[in-house]
Image 1 (cartoon, rainbow, N blue to C red):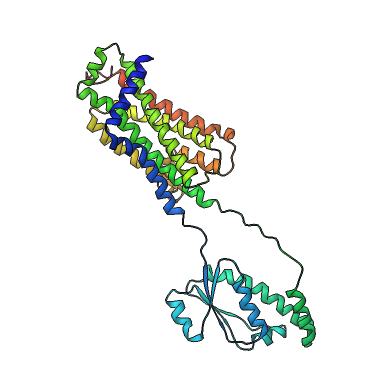
Image 2: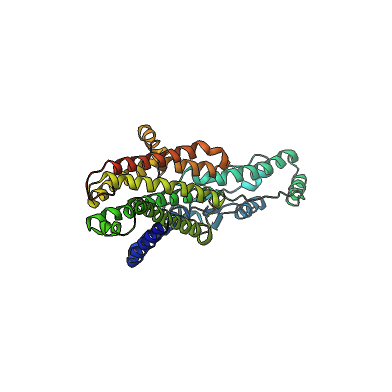
Length: 381
């Protein structure tokens, strides 16, 4: 055990000598957090820019204008008829509400004239204003029908409505979808960086054999098994650092709500770290040289991350690729995180954990088998 810790210390000494490489290993996950934040952090609801042309001088039309101005997320500007086309076509306004002359009188009679809404952005913009105006104007029309032609009775009903003691208490719920998107995207980037870091660190063993450093190490009282175990432990420490840095930056600096406890996310990602180590050892064991390992890394890591949904949701891909993605560990990791965000209990996802453990076991077995049967003197055994 003492020899393993000495070798781990030696690995970190080599990494710290190459400060730029170490900063890349730790810093790239932070870049992933920043990219995810820039992609989804500005997705808050924006203000709807509404122009109003009030061609009616009545009390009801003025109240309608005030009502629109009182709505949240609506920025209102009163304009003239001649400005409508220029403001809408130029993108200065999302829509324009036009109240024609005689609207107040028609509303008092119980049959209000239609309020026109002009927009080049379609229902996506106008439906919000329409829904509120229909309710408000519908109430006024009901008073007109109840009052008949009695204007005094209408004004009494209308004033009672304006002074109504009935209050609605509204509570705004936080939209967590953007945080889920940011978390998903950040973990997708982190997974790719973890895989690259694991392969590069495991590839150090091949490079040391090519430089004959490996044989000088084994001339000391150090076994080949201890040498490999030290690399695995070094790899695990590096990836735990990546995970902790990423989650800390997400939750403490960018205040991203991951949707479930910190320790659950840490546990799932640590399990994936073992998969990354197993895969990296398998790649290095199957490669004949450090250059071949680097090429094999690019052929395995990038495509599997792509089809598994690390860069964009796998649901948008063709069904054939989605089925292929089920054979990648990244897909099961992201599926586990998604289900945890949706409220699934951590203990209920044991099938996902067993599948992830199976991936780790398979990769380690491939690496052990290949290393044990390797006859080239440049390799471990």
